[in-house]
Image (cartoon, rainbow, N blue to C red):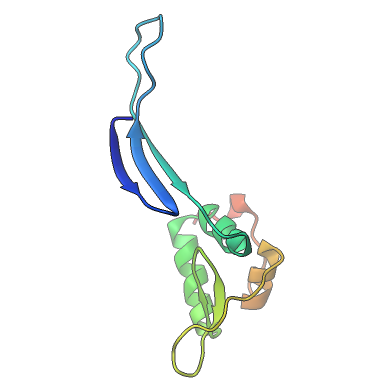
Length: 112
């Protein structure tokens, strides 16, 4: 490890470098990000990390217009007070698209 950028309960970010081997070739430093998600947040996280930033922004805007809040951890209905309600128990990524009235896009189609 070269440097630690963040080390929390649910996230680690650091910069690491493999030790030099017998070939004495200089190894490149690599950034490592590790995030832990609760099981019930699997599908929103999967959607978030298989889409481009633009795709995620579009999905979030659609969610807001449909009365939801979509983030990397959950899809929640928005209450009349403007606060998100309890996260919806999701069974697939496709269910998120269906709830938002958006045709399903495979991960390969999410690079906008």
